[in-house]
Amino acid sequence: MSGVIEVRNLVKDYGPRRALHGINFSIPAGRVVGLLGPNGAGKSTTMRILTTFIAASEGDAVIAGHHVDEAPLKVREKIGYMPETLALYPEMRVEEFLRYRAGIKGVKKPAARIEACMARTELSDRRRSLIGSLSKGYKQRVGLADALLGNPPILILDEPTVGLDPNQVQRVRELILELGKEHTLLLSTHILSEVEAVAGHAIIISQGRIKADAPLETLRASLAGRRRLLLGAPGDGADLRALAEKLPGATALETLAAPAGECRLAVSVEGERDLRLEAFRAAKERHVELVELRAEQFTLEEVFRHLTREEAESDLEGLGVAKEPGSLALDAAPAEQPAGAVAEPAAEKPAGAKEH
Image (cartoon, rainbow, N blue to C red):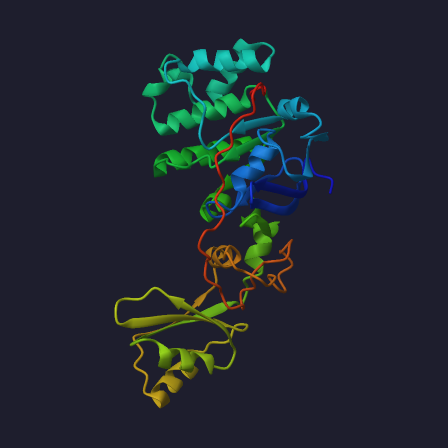
């Protein structure tokens, strides 16, 4: 690997629970990458290790040539970090807070840099506002301005749009797009549309394991010709499932949410084959009353949902995007999520650690 961000066999244990299982990825300079996964997948743990807030149990991470465990202060000079929960002082005014942070970071010519960061995040007209009086969207902008103060080459943003209304989300995404032209940018999110809106590359993580690491174009291209058949019928679904299992070209079944007294199934289909006619004829022969019969293409949402199944065991076969064992192919039978999935405990900042 030769990226500006390199993660090598990274492991993190919280007591008996393992949050990261030897993950690997590399991000070259100038790329905008989305670290995508469900809640508790290991995204924030990964980012806290990269930003030197917590130490890995095993493995290594290198930021701009500096090992996070050997040269944490050098690493912090190279990154701007915006955590999911911002450490803001509600009694301070925006400009006052940024001056305070610039002093901690040792920013040269702080007045000019603060002005530039407030202008970039559209905070200039709020410089005298108390942070505690700001909306969530404006507080996010203050956090982003803080991350930009040192003009770092790398930005790491943890769930930057969480809790925002649609208009605020759109504006933050526009800011991220602008920043991506000048910085290497890694942002975490559990929302696929967020990655599609701002990034060209996705790293998908689930239960502390990398499930896919690929450009979005590669993921989209992998879906060409992949379809599924949706079936619905009254009853407990036994007859419908027996029918579906006998359809030629069907590769996997999935039970979907359905109204009371009905059963709905999604049938993964090999290639571009359209099984609607076969399903209709089979239902007629078996005297199964269908209330739903339609075909649909797989979407990126489907890829994400399948890849982040908690008990996934097989690779994303044939797509060339899975990076580690444990990925779920689109034609593999889905598994149920186990109880007690690992959640990431909140990590405390080590005593005496220098802030970003």
